[in-house]
Image 1: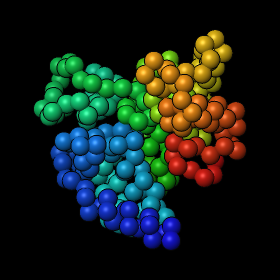
Image 2: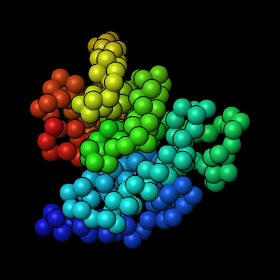
Image 3: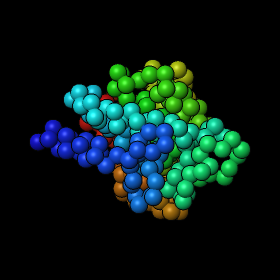
Length: 239
C-alpha cells in the first residue's frame, strides 16, 4: 500500500511539473509562480522526488527532482545571500538583475536558506554533486549569520533552523557541527531566559507541532539525541 501511494504521488508530481526558466517547478499555494523553499517549493518537492527515485529507480522522478533543484539554484540572490520568497511577488523580472533590489526573503525551514540547505544535506548520496554542495555551503553560511528569529518553533524559528546544521554535520559538511553547537548554546540560553516562544503571532502559546510547543519539544530532543530522535522536518521515522 505505501509503495503504491508513493508511486501515485510521484507520478502526480511529474505530471504537474511546469517547465520554467532554469528548470522545473510547481504551482502551489495559489502563488502564481513556482516557489522556492522546502515546505511549498522546489527544495522540498525536488528532495522528495530524488528520495523516491533513489529507492525505486524511477527515471522520470529523478529528472523532475534534478530540474527542480536547478530551477531553485537559478534564483539564488548573491545580494541577499539567500533565495527569494516568491509568494509576495507578482512576477520575477528582477531575478537576474545585478543591482540590489528589495526582494522578500526569509531564513526558515519553510522558506529560505535553512530549508533549501536541509534538502541538499539530506539528498541520497548518489544525487550529491558540486552544484548541491555549493547550494549547501551557501545555505549554511547564510543561516549561520541571519537565521535567528527569536522564536523557537521548527517551522520558522531557531530550532527548525538548527536542524540544517544537525543534518549537514551528519552528512560531513565542514564546520556544520561547530556552528550547530554555537547556535544551540545561544538558543538554549534565550529559551532559559524567556521560556519557550511559539512561532505564532505575538508568540501566543499553542500546542501544535510546526509552530507550537510540541515542535519545540521535538527540536530540543533532536539537539539532545540526534542519533535516537528522527527529524520530523524530513518526515523521517528513523534518525
